[in-house]
Image (cartoon, rainbow, N blue to C red; front, top):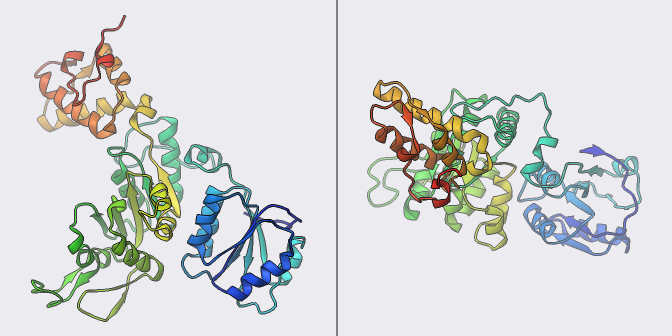
Amino acid sequence: MTTMPVVSICGGALIASANSALREQVVHRLNGRCRPVQQALGGADALAQLEKGKWQLLFLDRRIPDLDSDEVIAIIQRRFPGIQVVMLDSDTPDAEADASCTADELSARGWTARQTSLTPTGLTQTKQTFPASAATEPLPGMIGTSAAMQRVYRMVRLIAPRLTTVLIAGATGTGKELVARALHALSPRAAKPLVVVNCAAIPETLLESELFGYTRGAFTGAVQSQLGRIPAAHGGTLFLDEVSELPLGMQAKLLRFLEQKEIQRLGTSEITRVDVRVIAASNVDLASRAARHEFRQDLFYRLSAFPVELPALAERPADIAPLAEHFLACMAAAMGTPAPRLDGEALRILASYPWHGNVRELQHVMERASILVESGDVVESAHLFFSHPHTLALQPES
C-alpha cells in the first residue's frame, strides 16, 4: 500500500475501534460526507461488515483488541481492493478525521491514509501480484509444472521465510500437507519441529489436553504430565490439518493462543509463552462457514492472513501424465523392477477422467495398474481400474 491523499467521498465509511468516543468523534467529523457510516467494535467485526456491503473508506484503530491491524490491512488488500484505509491512533487525544484532508494533514493529526491497490480478490489473480523473479520450481515432494501450480510454488516461496500464519485451502487429495511441509522446510525454522495435528482425528473431549498439555493429576487417568502438541512445536511450525473440524469452544481457545502466544496446561495456573508459526488447512470453504456462524469469523481472519489455494487435479491436466509416471516409478523402485510406461490410450483416459479424489486418487489408480501390469512394461487402458468408473473416459477413441 502507498500513502496518498484522502479525497472527498460520497460512498460508505466504516469505523473500526473499541473506543466508542473515538468512533463518535469520527462520525461527527465526517458530518454527512459519507453515507452510510457504520461502526465496528474490532477487526473481525469490520471484516464481516466489509463482506456484506460496498464501502469506500475504512477508519481503522491501530489498537483494535481482536486482530493485529497490519493483518487486517493485509486481508483488505486481498479481499477488498480499492478501499481506502485511514489508520487511527486511539492514544492520540486530539485525533480528528476529515475526509477531505491531505495525507500530510492527516499525518500531522496522528493519522495515516492508505490505499489498497491489488487486483480483485481471488487466488486466480495472484500471478499479477507477485514478482516474476520468484522461483517457480516444484516444491519439495511435489510434481507438476502447470501454470496453476507455478503460482502455488511462487506464493509458498515468498511466504515461507516469514512468520505469517498461512491457510491452505483445497479439496481432499490436492496435497495440502505437502505444501505445509514445504513451507516448514523452506523457512528459517526448518531445523525445529514440525508438529502435525489432524483436528478431525482427535476426540473433542481430548482436544484441549492434546493441544495444550496437562499436568499429573489434572484429570482422572492423568498419571503423568504431558507436553501438548503446541508447546512441542516451540521454535518450529504447528500444522493444523482439517481445522474446520475444531469445535467452537476449542476455536475460542485457539484464537486466544494465536493472539497472545501463550498457553495454560490443564491442571496448572502457570502461563507459558510459546513461539510457534501456525499453518492451517481446510478442505471446505471456511469463509462460507464463518458467514453462517459455523466457524468463528475472528479465527478465520486470523488463520487466513495469507491464503494459499490448491487447484484440483482436473484443473491442471498438464500435470496428470508426469504425476502418473512418477507414481509408477516409485512403485517400481520399491519392488526393484523397471518402471512401466503408459501407452497412448491409457494417457487419453487419464486425461479425460474427472479425478474427484485428486492426486491421491491418481496415486491409487497407478498403484492398481502397477499390480495388474504384472511383469509387462506397458500400462494399457485395461490396467486402469477406477474407484468410480467414468464411462465416457473408458470409451474407445473414435
